[in-house]
Length: 360
Image (cartoon, rainbow, N blue to C red):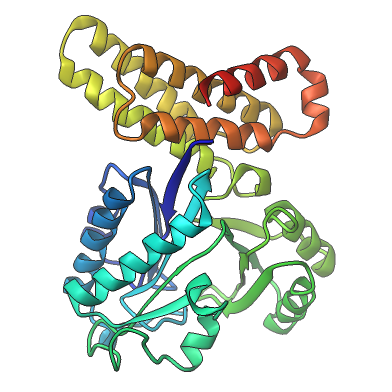
């Protein structure tokens, strides 16, 4: 089974347009989400090659170190550093042990090259949570927080979903609903008052296969008697998607990034056939990037991804991890299909499974 590595660094800057433009401008970037009220941005990166992901991360963290002064930072979200949280996630067959080893390398390079102290969390620290670090921020690498950069929290973890619901209701009511949601598996909640008078229920869904976006949205709406406004922070695995997740599917963006990367290589070849193929790849990338979260679209996306993989392999454009990225995208989109969808589309489902086996 193919595998790739994802990282989702959180930066204590959500307003500076130039910082956000530079943070979101990279071949390995799948998404950038910025929030002015929290003064925070979340970048999603992905690569098959661990060294490539490490290099991309260090470039972003160095920029944050250079441009952000934690002493002057103002925002709703709790934080201990300019590069506040840097998780590494194994996708597909990358393996959690390899992700943990990569996360440890990332932390050691952050301290060794940039001089920013590091706190381990998650699997690198026997399950220590970010909330524990924020209460007592003592670094594992280094002795005390950097004057301007603070501390960087580095760990490895399974995929999670960062998901916000916004209510035009009194904060005590929303806080009561947040307490009820914490009874669901893997749901962690905070509430924040927004400048417009509404209340944001901010969640990390750490067991998205059991309590994903659709589950928590329905539970919150039932508890408070009103449907909230939903906001996805970063990207969401297709199997955990719900309201507000259209166009924010991890697998869709992963496949889109692979298609764009291959299109660039085709354009550099310069011949007419390669340029025509590049146009087709960019069209497919647009469809995958904007993929809706409904079951029919997930099936479409899986077929697009596995089809692109076969085309790129035949055209000798599969370097740089694009084949692995497309394979993971197709496999995970296929895994998100429910049995009723397979029964409605038996032949498409059978062929998709056949192609996945052939390309694995």
